[in-house]
Image 1 (cartoon, rainbow, N blue to C red):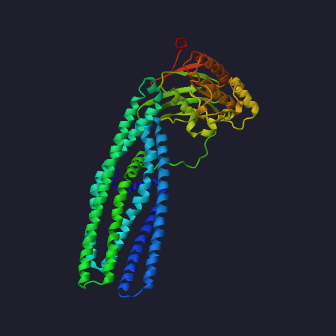
Image 2: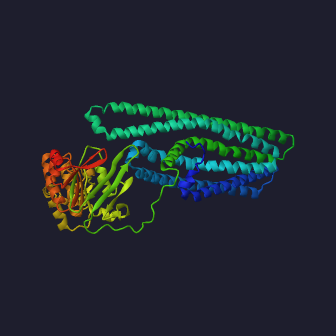
Image 3: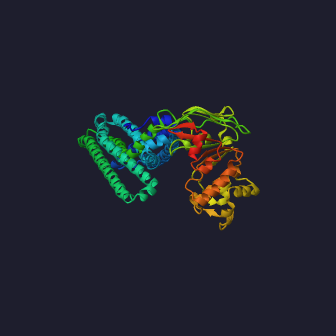
Length: 560
């Protein structure tokens, strides 16, 4: 982990904070000057009172200095909060961009739970760093420097003592801080493991329940939570120890200045106003360092998360979205689609290897293969959800990467394995791809998808409100809604990813009949295992271990 109190990578990766940081430094300089003015005015006022005089100018100066310090302190809080919000928003955006750019294989390798914890609780902990520690860090530079300069002109011997004792604060703070940093890193690792395990457990809860292992996970989560609690308490103990050490050093340092001042004042070797000025300014020299040490330990979790986020996004700035260039419009009519030596590789696996494939207009191709072989990845390439690691995909000779992706997707009809329906009316879910479709076309799509009987049985017909993920419809009915979407889209290329998976016999028959109507006269790519779908294909391809092979007529008969 980066052990510096301020990570310079932040200025490179989040350039928007440079201005606010400069403003925060300027406010720190103003605060130091106001501290000098306040101490000078108060010393003058008390020295005058000792001679039974009332210095109205000193009183006015003291009041103005106190009020100005309050205003500057408020401004520091506002600027620091704005910096924190900017950094968190930017790092979260860049973290999501880095994850999406590196693909699901990398995400699986890095544990989705760890990334989720980092983007949520982890970066939220930066508030303590930017609103608490960073302003104090700036004051710990500006205030001691200003105090030393002022005390040097007032009493050089006191300035010498301050100069010799000031370095003790960061030295002792660093010694304790190393221990706190190790404990914080241990706490963060435990929290990341806890988040990852909990996410895995929730995702796999149906499997755990099926095998009777769900109750055992309660003990595992409880044990991990206890470990995180123990690590958190150890970190807090070290933080409290750090505060005690810094308080002790600051108190002894002030005493080393105050005792000689008192002796010299009693012997007449020092003026009262000078003695009061030195006594007022000396604690101010140590206060920012002491506060920075305490705030640093409170913000170390956020620093750990920021270091990890900056490391994940890479040392080079994430490429921002460029201004859209003139993308090539997709062909208006049916086009020839070619996969030319296409490979899709993730960090831990290769989904597709050197795929060469040609799809002619109106051709229906079925794709078979074991789970995880790369069938869905092949569809994802055409949808633009996946980018080839090497090779390219062309449409009528034009690289798919150069096409207007939105215009290309408007020519695609997609029916996934599990149709995702949103909370809303049935009509809204059917017209998802064409919200402005006329009622006649909607009715035609409903009939073509064999969805008319289902809608007739709903309490409010097309206006029936569905819950999240289409709650209120069965799996087969949800698939028919997805088919109705594809019919309404009237796309020239249809992609179907095992539309009959996990359906009962009656639902499967209805979906198969609608699928036959959908692929008729269109270019179709069907991921299928059922013989009924294979009968509709002109060609059958098999994907295994990422490689695509075309089955012969004899192989096709055996598969069927």
